[in-house]
Image 1 (tube, each protein chain N blue to C red):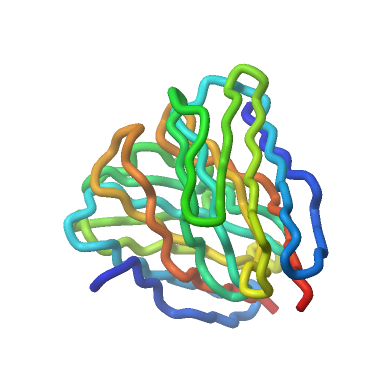
Image 2: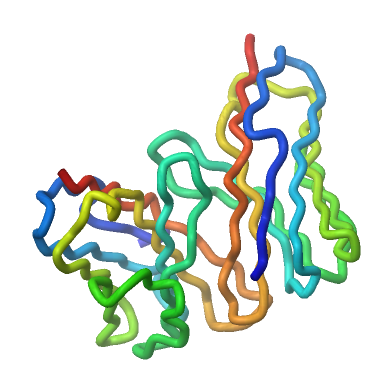
Amino acid sequence: KQEVTQIPAALSVPEGENLVLNCSFTDSAIYNLQWFRQDPGKGLTSLLLIQSSQREQTSGRLNASLDKSSGRSTLYIAASQPGDSATYLCAVKEYGNKLVFGAGTILRVKS
Amino acid sequence: GAGVSQTPSNKVTEKGKYVELRCDPISGHTALYWYRQSLGQGPEFLIYFQGTGAADDSGLPNDRFFAVRPEGSVSTLKIQRTERGDSAVYLCASSFSYGKDNEQFFGPGTRLTVL
């Protein structure tokens, strides 16, 4: 059974700092990996989607990498801002089309 | 509408009652998914539909949970004899079609509280 783990569970950084969120998964037979952002009381906003054949994706200040063979992904956030404060979720899509999520990393960026 | 919508946004009920949660997918999306998110956890898969039929209901926790999508658009998640452990945020997502390359788009969720 696929298990997704995110480290750290929570992170507090000063504004302007670069940071890395980690995600690991136990079964490398995935179609893709996706990073989401969730604000309190809201749904999920997709940030980046990496297909299994890709190594990384970039969008603005965000960069996500994928090492499928080792079961790891990282989300790099450059020059963090208070508006980046949210919960970040990692999910893998496996055979059967369902997403398997990690528990998330709660990020707080202090101004 | 432009995105996935869910109603109600909040539902408070008493233990033992019956509840229905509704999801309106993005127009034209044939695949629809339900997930449940407990406090401090990531969403967990419940069921997904391709068209009108449930293609995978392996995530439904027990027979108190049931979902329908009679016309291949709107879906209703039904919970009978609610228990306090059913309290969670229920998320709905849709995608253009079934397939590994189709991205799922999520609604804002329904927060269910069972007293």
